[in-house]
Every structure is written in C-alpha cells, then in structure tokens.
Amino acid sequence: MEKQQKQKKPFYKKWWVWVIAIIIIASAVNGGNDEETADTNKNESKAPVTETAKDKPEEKKEEPKKEDTKAEDNVPAEYKSALNKAETYAEAMSMSKQGIYDQLTSVNGEKFSPEAAKYAMDHLEFDWKANALKKAETYSETMYMSKQGIYDQLISENGEKFTKDEAQYAIDNIKADFNKNALEKAKTYQETMSMSPEAIRDQLTSQNGEKFTKAEADYAIKNLNK
Image (cartoon, rainbow, N blue to C red; front, side, top):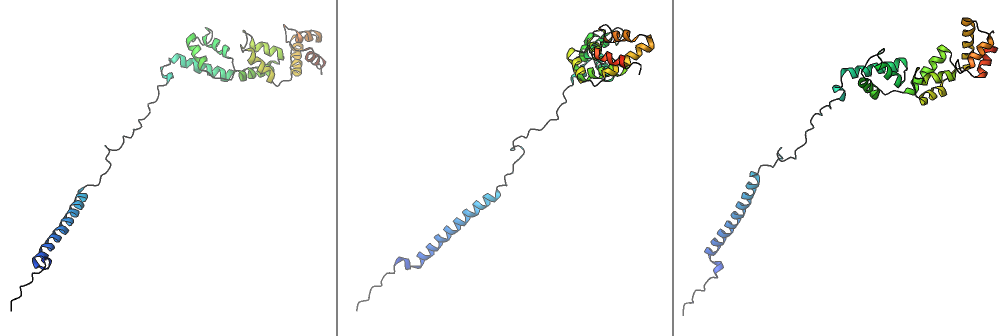
C-alpha cells in the first residue's frame, strides 16, 4: 500500500505566518502610539501663547493736558490794573461804560493809557442797563429829580454818559413817585430860596429847570403848605 502523501497545510496555518503577522500588527500599533505620543509631546512642549505687551495694540497714554497758557499771563500789569479799577467803578458806583472809560483815561482821574483803558472796557462784562436803573433810582431818592430830568442826566456828556437805550430802560423800569419828588423839590425852593408858589411852579416845569410835568407841579403847589 502506497504511503499516502502528506497533505500540505495551508500557509495561514503555519506557525511562522502568525508570528510575522503579530510582529507587523505590534509594530503598527506601536508606531501609531509613538506618533500620537510625539504629537502630544509636541503640543505639550508648546508654551501657552500669551499676549505680550509687544503684541497688544499700543494704548495711547493720556498725557497730562498742558494747561493752555492763559492770555492774561501775557497782559501788562497796567492793563490788569485798569480792568480791576473799571470793575470797581461799575460795581460800586453804577457808572456807564463810557463814563468809566473817560474816568480811567482822565488826567484828573486814573490816568491810564488809552490802550489799557480800552483793554479794560473790552474785557469788562456788565449789565449797563441795570447800572442805568440804579443810577436813576439814586437821582430820584436823593435829589428828587423828575423823570425827564433823570433821563437827560443819564445820557448827558456832562453827566452819566449812558446810551439812550440804557437810559430809556431805566426810566421805563424805575418805581418812583414823581408827584412826591415834585413836592420835595418845591419845599426845598421855598425853604432855601424863599420863592413864591408861582415862581416855584415855573421852576418845576421849566425845561431849563426841573422838567416836571404840569400835573406834577400842580400837585406840589397844592400840597406845599400842608
């Protein structure tokens, strides 16, 4: 009987085939792990990127504002003095703008230069109408003047030198009893000058005198001896 030939085993059943396969698989797994480890190490080795001062947009530092050089620092002392004096005249004496200027430059007054006086008036902010009203009240209360007499005194070049608008504002807003003023003025003429009632009446209404109205003069004469 013939010996049966040994049947060859399929190659995948051979032991060395499995050894090689295991080695290949192991290598592949290790290679993948190594790659992941390398990537991980690489990522870990990267320092966290922080924004440096260089990378940040430059913030504009607010420089302390230099104080603007004040114009008055360059103003001559004479000009400042003229302005201070002008303020005093306006506040304490209720003078007009033109009246103050003339007083500042007058040789019998403050004797400032025209330039210093002009600087003072250009920089003096004031309510000239209010000053005209105050001055009108003073004339009414202390000198018993008539409405027309006060107006003329306010605008006179030899008087207060207010503008016509300023004087009219004063007359429109003054609270005064001009009948009483006419009576007080009549008493003064009678007591100091011994004038007759009719002479007093004429003086009260005269355009060269007190400039009261006829009605105001009549009231004064009617109440003169009461």
